[in-house]
Length: 235
Image (cartoon, rainbow, N blue to C red):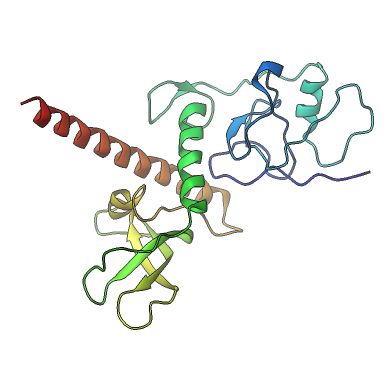
């Protein structure tokens, strides 16, 4: 019997990370797009693999490593209803059962996270101030640790980039960033995109919540700047 690997990791997925999940899309939609975050047959959100698993519901011998609830759903069997309490999404205000962040906002944040992780570092066209460190983005290794002077959560981050003096070779810079500063950077030159492997579940949850709040702050700032620009153009 063959074994399929688990679904890809995403800090915004809610599905079991140790198994491969199946995405039940209607035939007219075609196969799910690799890299996206979609509802799986088990009611949880899972990232779509680069090699999506296609199964015949009538097949008795399936590869191991599949989510049992997803398989049951694909075969038309009863899957327990999602009985988690409804809460309000902290980003859009809609109802959600996914830990205060709805499916649409999780999918949007996942796409941003994917873009930051996979976009190659561009060659800078303008050199900043002499002696500066230019951050070219992730992947970053981040540990939720202390708190800054404002009482906000701080991260120990490792950035990838180069220095503007001497030989411009790639290097890494270790520093501590409070969330109040990180919010100004996410979505521009760098992003907090990972957490240390083996971290406690509470640290992972706290990390994800902080990233969500930071991304929301950046999104609101962009919308505010766009509104100001629009007002100036109408004058």
